[in-house]
Structure formats: C-alpha cells, structure tokens
Length: 266
Image (cartoon, rainbow, N blue to C red; front, side, top):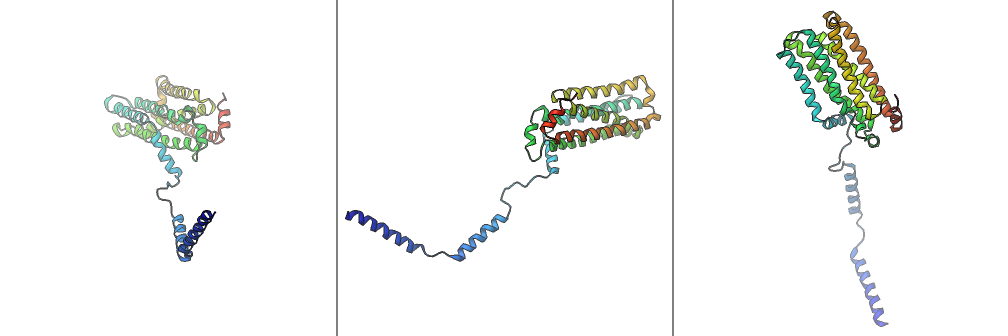
C-alpha cells in the first residue's frame, strides 16, 4: 500500500515540476506566429496550377490533333503546288484541282473533330470544367484555323505561280469546302456516331464528284464569267456551314440526353 502511494506521489511531483518549467504563454510570440500564418495563406501556394483560360484550353487542344492530320494537310498543299509547277494545266484545270483539294481538307480533319463521340468519352467530358461543348468548339477552332491556312496556300498557288485570277481561284475553292463542311455537320448532328463519320466522308466525296462533273459536263461553269455565280454559292454555303456548326454545338450543350436523342434522328 505504501509502495502504491509512493508511486502516486512521484507522479504528482513530476506533473508539478513540468508545469512549473512550462512557463506562461507568450502573447507576442503567439501574435507573430498567427500573422505569419495569415500572410502565407494570402499568397498563392507554391507550385499551385492557375486555372486555365479558354484560350489556353484551345491552344492545348492542338496537341491532341493527330500528326497525320498536319501531314495530310501539308500533302494537299504540296499537291496543288506540284500541279502548278510540274503540270501543263490550264486555269480551268487548276480551278477544279483547288476545289477538290479544298474539299479534301474536310476529309482530313473530320475524324479528329468527332473523336469524342468515336471514343465514347462524351459522358466523361460533360463532367469536366471544359465540357463536351468546349472540347468540340476548341477542336473546331483549331481545325478551322489550320483549314484557313491550307485553303490560303491552295488558293494562292495558281495566282502566285502562274498568274491566275485570284478571285476565281478563291471562289472555286471555297464553294466545295463550305458545302462539304455544312453537309458533314448536318450528318454529324442527325446520325449516330457510328454512322456520322462514314456518311460525312460520303457527302464530301459526293461534293468532289459534283465538282468534277460540272467541270466535265458543263465546262463553262469554270469560265471566268461564272466567278460571281461561284461567289454566291460560296457565300450561301458558308452561311449554311456556320448555321450547322452553331446547331451542332447547341445540341452538344443540351446535355448527354439531348445529344443521344438527336443522334437517333434520320
């Protein structure tokens, strides 16, 4: 019993000793510590990633476009330059070539534009900060800018190398291009993903075939006097393509249910 009481007394003595050694709280040191903590919290965390802007997101999407797309676009430009330099082509022949190659740029970029649906990741993208509509718009901007560069090179090849009429070269290339874009977007919006890509390809090939048929059966369609008629077709096609792009993005913005229901339309 005396041993047990001795143990308790030792514990009490130790507690009293440590309390005496602890000392009173230092108010100044406490205030300085709190001020340092608040100042650190007000500063951006070291290594923290700042929120990405939409412009940065668009630029980042360029990294996800397959290298084959850029290579194919360069090949289209090279083909147009080769026709101008190596071939003995008449201006009408080059007008047809520019239209066919311009439409082919749609074939090149369409798979990457529809990669979300093809890879079945649209539902995952809807949950992200930049959702499916933002992804589609970003890729549309990236591919659209690259198409502008390719079309500019195709359109200027004949005027710069052979002295062809630049206005005629412009409208002969733009009309098939915008027709291909508009029709492909209609099919993308109205058909299920498994059918949209092949049907978009088929539509673009049909536009290219129609351009060749007009060249073969109605050669006057590529005459200098018809340039303004081509300009009207190009302007109407551009307006149609813009309308379909807006409708497609609006369909995506409606959510997964609306996107799935619209894909069942025929």
